[in-house]
Length: 284
Length: 284
Image (tube, rainbow over all chains, first blue to last red; front, side):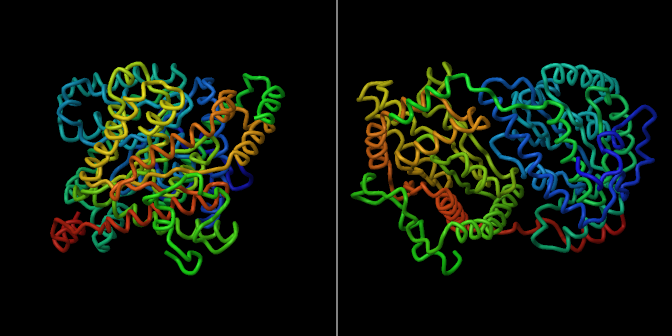
């Protein structure tokens, strides 16, 4: 972590603890960060190499068959909150060969015929990789609850199923980082309006976005419950103020760096005789 | 294409035509490019945005359900020729959300039980996406031939099967760019030696690399035949001199840009009433 831009680590300040209230989160704030947008952008650029180097070591372990650990970043958010920007500007800063990205849209008929975790499990990252979920199994307790796509008892069952599922994921060696990008309704209105005003952004707009927006309080209640029920010590939630895009990106970058530092991947040792190979190569 | 760094477009100069002889390709050369390494690196950086913008338009079409076309970059090369660097520095310059990357290793038992194209077909990019194959079905006529993993008549059959397969791929709307990164044996020796000399590169080295190196002439003969037999007007091969990494990266970036310019993706038009939506949004 560079000094002195952070006065408190986002791994600590933004981590959901007991008594968490989503209502209390200020989407405009930049907790723990001393500095403005320009400082934040410079920091994002300078930390990119740190993340990239750690990722390369992890990937090296996987290529050597030594990787036991992986990382999974779960991104959840209301529309326009900046998931795409995180993927482009943070995830995009590392070698694509080490990334496994999965975007979960509305489930297909085949997926609906299975348990809601069926399609999720298939996309878990392999050891040595950084998996990124653009939406996830949490949609099954968010949109599913807000739109009453299933009955309340099934939603209840799912919270417990998620906790159990994530326990097995973490036990398999995956560092799980669950992020909710949190914007305010006013900020969303501004961003949606920009999409309407710019023809090159029309493709990002869907009239359904306004319908969902009208259910904002229902979504916040669904997030509150989902987060409360599934934030565990090993599978923590981070609620990241995201009205400032640069801040949210910086935080997610730091969360990834912290997870990789925790894995502490090392360059694999040679499993061959280096000097003998130098001779063979020289003679070839 | 920016002026004046290119005197001749790599889409033309490096494209394999009738009478092509791999032996005649100078791996040290930088055909058509006027400028040194520094100029090349600056050009790579400045063209990144062009590629990225084109890719975003293509992706927008796919999100709008309007994309009919895609791109598939096939990368083939001897060890150390720079496939990884192309993926990291060229492909890594575009939004990961629009990339579908597939690395083909030695086939699994399940894959071997099927026709050699079975695993390939499953990884073809969807419309709107840029697919990248790190190795490909060409291994089945390269390593398979050099190591006599199958008999000669099956190799013969495969050349024709590849041409037929690629015809259907192209007919489906995929721009197919087949690239052989071409290095010299001396350059490979230098790069392998560097991997042996740096402990942080040992993971990239495998004693089998020297065994393969000793079969260099066999591989070149296999490449010559594979390229001759499968270079078609719609599924061209580009043999890219790759002793200068910066040059090979620049060329592949230009090939991708040219393919996307040929698709000419446009921002999708709104399929909703923009003014009505502005009012709905303002009232929400």
